[in-house]
Image 1: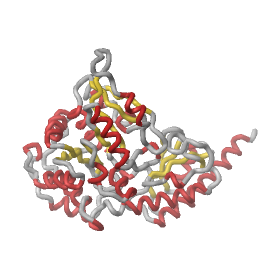
Image 2 (image 1 turned 120 degrees about the vertical axis):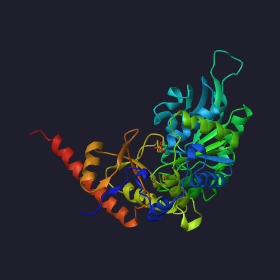
Image 3 (image 1 turned 45 degrees about the vertical axis):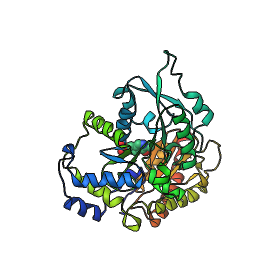
Image 4 (image 1 turned 180 degrees about the vertical axis):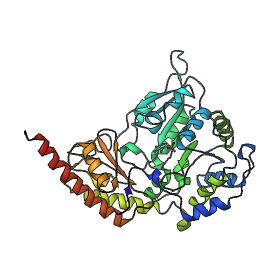
Length: 372
Ligand SMILES: *Cc1c(COP(=O)(O)O)cnc(C)c1O
């Protein structure tokens, strides 16, 4: 039987042989005492790549966003964010439970951005004692629910300028920031320039087993380090894990950033083929609000979102039976994510399996609808 092709997420990527070697050989210390040289090297490398003073290695993107919120906000303050952002939907309300803050949610547009007039109107009146104080603006790049749209540095600069006019910092949840940088053909440094803090995941398309890095000013990272301790994220000989991150962040073809372009090309080719299949429909939601055919031009990075004119669970099961894993997503969507380890030949197999699964579930639906 051919190996499973797992497109549920780019988090399923496994460490490369070079990462495993680096992990085995990593020089380590006790990072809570601040003397793990491999962790220090990773934090410095991430900060340098994104043009910030300092970095903090954390176990997950969720913890990176949480400690950023702990560092930026006081209890009772409020963040302005898109209502389909990961920090709103997918982080177990850590902002409320741990940081004691609220999120004022604005609707995103199909390109993953907010209307800037709405953003301006969302800041609270700091003199009105009825209101929470606005303490942070958060963005997501790439923006997952819009089908992984890369958000431009020009837009980021406009959001930052509005936030800063109100004396509020900008945090970018850049779980897939490097996908955005590669898609826009710019440096991470240019993409992060106007943000006060940025998190990115090592554990997704960069193929590391675990970890994210938060970058920002030295003072912000000092506060975030305290927040990391508070939530139990102070780790010890963790250079073993940071070593994989250093491999991923190497320049050029040695590292894992440049090759994200292959994932984008594979996603695009997959979407082009799926769009022609009978039973595949527009993604809906904010990813592609207009009904009709799936639009492959919406695929700018490694996400393909679509809907099926079938029972979705039956379709996913029929795909699984053919060795292909995709996952259900919001707004009745199916999500397929390309990543390291998925080759062009795998995309061909996925297209064939999808066509067969659509065919099987269509027949089954007709059979079920026919009275016995
Ligand atoms: C994956 C992800 C995160 C963090 O995820 P972890 O699984 O906690 O590492 C944060 N934001 C976005 C947009 C993500 O996709």
